[in-house]
Length: 195
Ligand SMILES: CCCCCCCCCCCCCC(=O)SCCNC(=O)CCNC(=O)[C@H](O)C(C)(C)COP(=O)(O)OP(=O)(O)OC[C@H]1O[C@@H](n2cnc3c(N)ncnc32)[C@H](O)[C@@H]1OP(=O)(O)O
Image 1 (cartoon, helix red, strand yellow):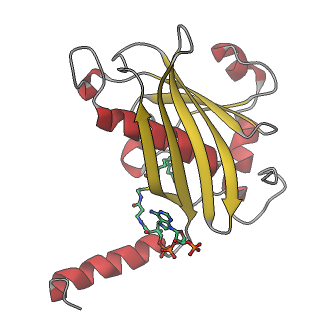
Image 2 (spheres, helix red, strand yellow):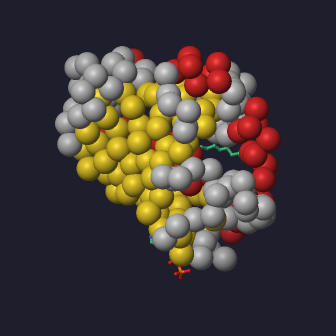
């Protein structure tokens, strides 16, 4: 299924349009060497998770994202931080999942500002080296009501070898999603989960 361009939709994604246009200028593209067709965004507090906003960078090391409207394809630059080492010199599987969640989630968020991951299935094909340049690639497969399906890969930048692959289901949420969650949590504490 082909999705409308984010610039032609006005329900979920107008929040980010101005920012994307601002960050689309040539110097940014040249700085990471992407071709003109790709709109480039530098992660500077825009669409970062709450805890990462103050430092202006993704804690998982997903740093530069470029999106191709026509292909609905996101590319990103990734480095696994030493803090997420699992085996010697290689990433913990939890970091691989988190990085892929980020890469797929950012792709879906090009179209829908508010989504959460409902399901993420990861194939770990090869160990992922810590501190080596990686790339993320993700694209949207289908939209069905509130459900958006996406696929993504984590690759070794040096050779493009696919190290891990994920498919995800993302659900479009309404603005009251987190308020409802806070109410639910408060109620659980009152009733001990019996209500
Ligand atoms: C604004 C700036 C933000 C910056 C952030 C930058 C982040 C960067 C990006 C990072 C990205 C990271 C993002 C993160 O990490 S988000 C954090 C991790 N995810 C969560 O916390 C989500 C927790 N789950 C929920 O809140 C609810 O369960 C949701 C909202 C998902 C659905 O509850 P809700 O009550 O709303 O809806 P529903 O239950 O009627 O379901 C709706 C439809 O979906 C289908 N369905 C549901 N679940 C599943 C499932 N598991 N497999 C298959 N299908 C499933 C369901 O059958 C139904 O289908 P249909 O009957 O309609 O056909």
